[in-house]
Length: 148
Ligand SMILES: CC(C)(COP(=O)(O)OP(=O)(O)OC[C@H]1O[C@@H](n2cnc3c(N)ncnc32)[C@H](O)[C@@H]1OP(=O)(O)O)[C@@H](O)C(=O)NCCC(=O)NCCS
Image (cartoon, rainbow, N blue to C red; front, side, top):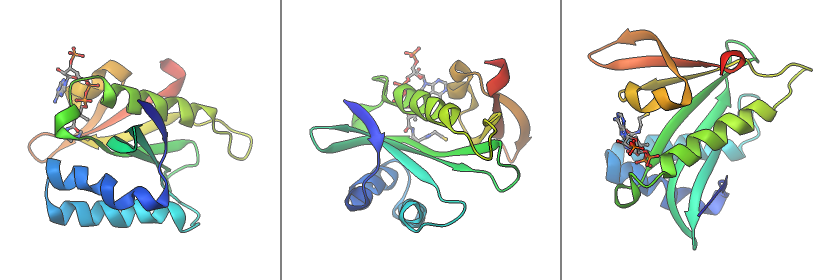
């Protein structure tokens, strides 16, 4: 299994994971977001997939935040139901963190990564900490790259 950047012709099969984990409606929203990776915008998201023999097992996205060019956001962490609990989510999230750490924009390195999640405990292992809580169990978590 390898983790690499998404290709445009893999969008439909990648968002099937969202349909399976959530709903058709949500997967259409994800599709718009994945398409944006190929639209050459200033705040262009990037997506990475976990792939094995042409099958997409999971994916995750990240984008520079419009708040600050040293802040990144991670989104859509999803692993297909059949392949959950076999370390794929961990590989995807770890790979995105290390990709973000390699970035240098205007001579500066990223300093933190934000994400929004209903599963805050899952992200503890990577060092994310809750900085804000809303709704029932929705957490905004932050990873301080200087304190890892
Ligand atoms: C959450 C998700 C991405 C985890 O991916 P995964 O590939 O199954 O996870 P991994 O195999 O890397 O890690 C499994 C470990 O995480 C733990 N874990 C899984 N879900 C968890 C949760 N909600 N809270 C705490 N720990 C959790 C497992 O118990 C397991 O622990 P272990 O390593 O000690 O055995 C996956 O379950 C998923 O796609 N869920 C549906 C979409 C979703 O909820 N995404 C996250 C919200 S942003």
